[in-house]
Image 1 (cartoon, one colour):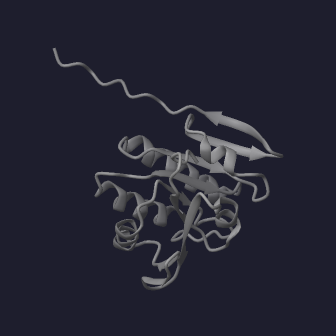
Image 2: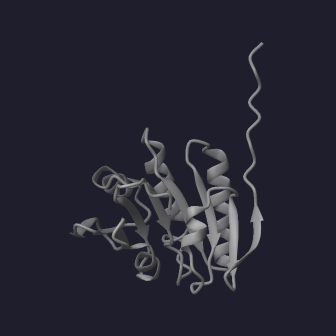
Length: 178
């Protein structure tokens, strides 16, 4: 959460509960919550409803909200493919169509279903170097904010307030033209 000095930053949080939005919200940080539904709508200035598998729904939100960060926690609390991997894929499709892209944090739990979402997030970030992102395996109780402010590494797991594993992102070796 590297907030610009003197500026109020905007974050988009895709989650069907308020645990992450509540932790992020502050006088310096506006949080726009995105919940899942069958159709697209804007419930209020700070809340959208979208079909999580539709990239165009994510694009409409990105056009409306000048966010510096997106927290994708759609799979927390459920094992629904549309809210987990399909939604993450739709979000990244919408981001690839943009020239300015906010940083993305994919927040998962520790079940086998969430492991699949985490693996997909790593693959999508590796294959799309124009999108900066990280995956956080969260138990739902530890303080998530310190990890969201960290930009090194591609994957972390929080257990008892401590990082339990961290894998640094690979750097691309781009051959030089001779």
